[in-house]
Amino acid sequence: MARIDVLLGDLAREARTTRRHLERLPDEHFDWRPHPKSFTAGELAGHLVECLRWAERVFAADEFDFSPATYERVRANTVAEVLAAFDAAVETALQAMANTADRDAEQRWRMSRDGVVFFERDREAAFRDLSLHHLIHHRGQFTVYLRLLDVPLVGTYGPTADERR
Figure 1 (cartoon, rainbow, N blue to C red):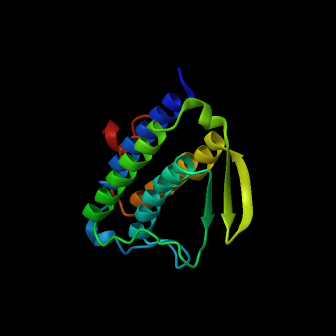
Figure 2 (tube, one colour; figure 1 turned 60 degrees about the vertical axis):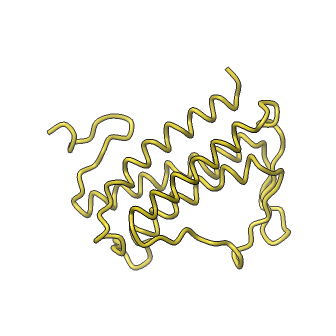
C-alpha cells in the first residue's frame, strides 16, 4: 500500500471521529471555557479546523512561512459554522494529499516563522506532527470540555461510558 494511501486513510478516519465530537457541542456553550487561560469551547472547535488546514499546507507546497501577524484563526459563532468549515478543511486536505505522489511524502518540508526556519522534516512527519497528532491531541482536550459540560460523549477508539448505558 502506498504511503499517501495510508495517510489519507488515517486522516479520513480521525476526521470522521472528530466531526462526531464537534456535533455534540451545544451552541449555548460555545463561549464557555474551563479556565480563564483556556480556549472557549468554540475557539477550541475552530482550532480543530485549523489542525486540518495544516495538512493542505504541508502537501501543497515545500514550505510554509507562518507569521503570527497575518495568521487568521477560524472564527465561528455556531456549531453549524464550525462544521461547515471543518468539512471544507477535510475536503481540501484530502484533495491536497491525493494530488501528492507517494515519493513526495518523503520529500523535505520546511516551516518558517517570519523568514526564520522553525523546523524541517519529511512531509509525512510534518503532516503527522502538525495536523494529525495535533488534531488528536486537541480532540482529547475537546472531550474533556464536553464532559465538564455534561454532554454525553461519543466513542473515539471504542465505546464511552455514555454509550454503554
